[in-house]
Each structure stands twice: as C-alpha cells, then as structure tokens.
Picture 1: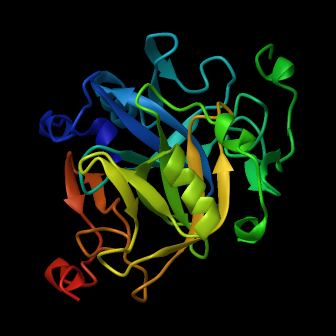
Picture 2: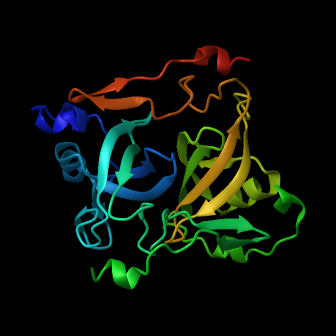
Length: 139
Length: 139
C-alpha cells in the first residue's frame, strides 16, 4: 500500500472505536471474487502494522498476541483497501489471499471460513477442503 | 427461504457459539454484487426469526431489543443464505437489500456501511449518500 511509505499520524487510529478490550472486529474480503474469507479481530498495533506492511496482521484472542496471517501457513494476505464502517467500530479489508490457488483463508484448508450453510434445518459443509490442514501447517 | 416452511429443531441454534452476552456477530453481504453491506449482531431469537421469516432480524445492542431491519426505514433484507464460520461463532448472510435501487443498507443513506476508506493517512468517505437519512426515516 502507498501508506506503507507515507509517514502518518495516529489520528486515524484514534478515530477507531476500540471495544472495552481494545479490539475491533475485522472482515476480510477477497478483492477479486468479492468472497468473504474470514472474520478476525485487531488491536491498535495490529491495525497500525497492517497499514504499514500492506499485509493483514490480526490479534489472536486465543493466543493473546499479534498474528501476522500466513506466518505459519504461508497464506499471507495482501491488503488493497482498509475500510471503516459508519460507527467507526468495524473494519473491512479488501485482500488478495496468497499461498495457494485458489486462495485458502481457513485453517480447515478451505477457501473461506464461511463454508457451513444452513440447509434443511441444519448446518452443512458445502465448500471443499482444498488442502489438508496437516500439510498446510507442516510446509 | 425453504426453511421458513420446514419445521426444524433447535440443534442448529445450539451449534452456534454464542458469546458471553448471548450474541453472535453477523456480516450481511449483498447477493448480487458481493458487496459487504453491514455488520450487526444477533441473539438466538434473532437468528431463529431470520430463518423463519427469510428476512434479516438483528439484535440492537444499543436499544437492547430485536431489530427487524427495515421496520423503520422500509429497507428490508431478503435472506438467501445463512452461513456459519469454521469456529461456529460468526454468521454471514447473503441478502437482497430492498427499499431503494441501488440498495441502501446504511443509516447514513449510503449503499454500504463501509464507506470510509483509509487513504493518505486518514479515513475518507468515498461512497455517495443515495438518499437523505431524514427522508429515509420520515417516509
């Protein structure tokens, strides 16, 4: 992103309405297809690093630390746009999902995390596993 | 939705990992364009009603009650698909946004709530207001 090389103040980070845990929900949408790939969280440092690197950096609530998406799987996300909603409390990223074609954003080895569809009164997995997760995290 | 007329148990509702406030985050995506329109929350009753009506029913955290999207604005959302993510804790709706052409999902009168783009070190409103909010909520 151009911003990566533009010195910026932190007003834009102050404008975000961080929740009581200092986090903001983040939606990652694939730029090319429009598919919603995943949902995650960021803290202030994660959002700052995302803008700086031009790659998605989230905050892992389970691990309690920054999570540079792809650091283990190789499935990095280039960030083309960072958007903020009308209430300043949700972020939307437009990304390219790297590391596999088609992109794999989900830790189950699927394209998108939203692979369960409500059908006939139950959740049904309707998207294929593109790569065995055991191979994703060993590579 | 077909499900509206199919008697279903509540196993699918039990499968959702509701947070400590009994809520789940929800992303609404426009079926035709792929645009992410808005982000909101549902409780169990909101999700059950969404499936039953085939229209989006959210839970308003600020008002502390169910919010049948469009009840004041006329901007209802038909729900084509309900999806759940890999952790069972985020819902994605594929919707058609009614009441205006192009659809207005945002209370500011814009198509999408994600109209602020990070550019040149700041958030910039990059999407037009399609209808004056004062008119939306008076009609």
